Amino acid sequence: RILQSIYLPVVALSSAMAAMVAQNFGARRPSRIYRTLWTGWGISSAVMVLGTLLCLLFPAFLVAVFNDDREVIAYGTTYLSIMGLGNILVGTIMCVSAVFQGIGKTYPTFLAAVLDNGLYAVMVFTLPGIFGWGIEAVWWIKLLTAFLEMAFCGIWLKFSLKGIRNSCR
Image (cartoon, rainbow, N blue to C red; front, side, top):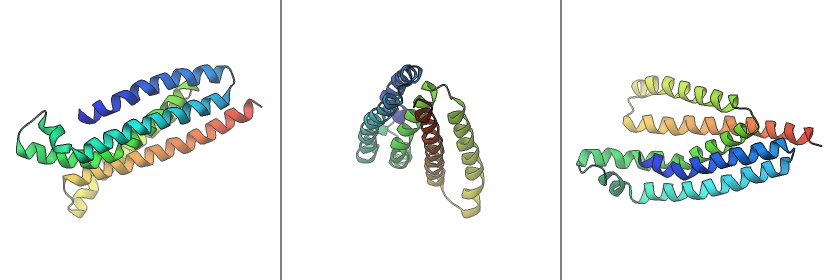
């Protein structure tokens, strides 16, 4: 829930981005779509960097606000220290998803999420057992699959926006 609280401003931002992209897509103004993407991504990244700093600098405090059990705090501290590193990935995925929503293509981010979750499940149910990794491996694997999801969506968006820009000339 701590990470979800960090994500909230970016959820709101991405909702606004989707509407702005849709308006500019309808108006055939690709330069404004690009500007919305880059401005939104910049704001999102700033918020997520702050969230990452909170997770890295004060993880025990953040967990202790909700639970005073030492074992919970220890696991929560490790979790926030690892998963907090993925905040920018999550923010980027949200911004890219907003642009896809705005241009009326929701299937790329759906497909990317399905692939992310499928790959995550396969890796989590196999690799830690094979290599004897601990609970931390589950979180590192999630970061890896989130990175792959972000890259997949980003590349797809690049080609989609190139097609839009070419069609508006």
